[in-house]
Image 1 (cartoon, rainbow, N blue to C red):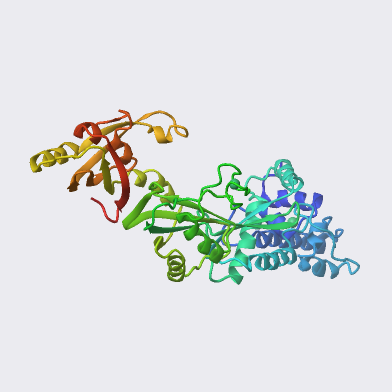
Image 2: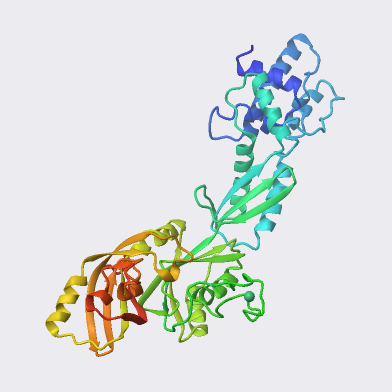
Length: 451
Ligand SMILES: [Zn+2]
Ligand SMILES: [Zn+2]
């Protein structure tokens, strides 16, 4: 087996009609700072010089290789024509790449890609490709046959070459591998360019001033969104939701396909969300616009939802933040103001009141899944801590308390006791049937405003 490069190359170009890129790529991992087309050209030049040297000394036949007469190698036909005037360039596609790597094809694909990208805003991109298996197999076979160890894959050459050409045209955007805004896939099997626009993640906080509005869109329980008599053909259980107030204007501004609302926990439908608000991330899938005017959107949303919901947009974030909201932040402490109605009148002296505050502060509560959600959640015991418990106002039939506790604590059950399923609970402590009549989330504590 021939081991010198020149030996391998002269066999290869005799057997296979290959373009400069495909020849150079077989040695693509040797040297740096030049393209495979340059590598291939250099090798062909060397072979050609070797031939001319021998021709002049020994008057041999023209070289037995169509690769030296390929369309992208004028030097070949021009040089050989000096001795064999009837020599013509060989107008055949490259045996390996079928001319996919020809400068003409790369240029056409770049133009097509720019056209396809026209409606997208992005600042980072990545190029990928799908090649016909026949091309990949052919190259593998050649590598084996000629014992070529330093070749680069055709995909990686193609992606790089197209990436370079695109980069030259799009000077505002950069190639990025980790989290590009858009991924272009050149499907060379079906001759298509596919664009995948990665989602936008928008971080904000919302406040909810009106009771009776759910956090997320709630599909009709009868028709599951199709629209029926029961839901007045809206497909929804509630006409409005925090999610819809926020997502509609943003989705349309971003020209996205769909949106997903991720809240850092959720308040009950009948609870208000006050204070500095609850963090959320709105995910927009397949956005076409990314340079959104958040101030304007914020104003639009707040005007439209006036008196019900108000938001503040902090800016763009990423998927990691969503996971954080779902896990860590959902257990972050929350502050609640709770109005409790008492079945029988309560007399609570100052020292007794102080002692209850003390008992319920820094206390671990064990809660079996509440009866009201038992139909949709597994029956488990959940432990959550109360950080502080303050009695704000005592009236004979009503108590107002301020509770700061770990996220996920069922506050209503902490008060009622939920037929003994929550322990300890306020009802039992007071020995009075107590129910929450109003609940407001006053604060959601996170990194920005911690306890
Ligand atoms: Zn080729
Ligand atoms: Zn319905």
